[in-house]
Image (cartoon, rainbow, N blue to C red; front, side, top):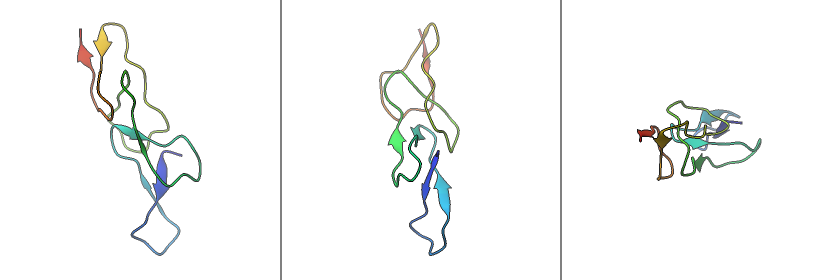
Length: 68
């Protein structure tokens, strides 16, 4: 999880999902954008952390939070 099959390689290899994306289903072939209210700035994540107190993020697929 946190990665998807590498479509540019004949070998059985995977690539990590990008920042602002995640993959929480083993065997899935697509990364999903982090939903609104979440964000992260690391590759290969299995989930997107919720905004903390006084933080917000209204858009999907984001890597940073805004401070309220």
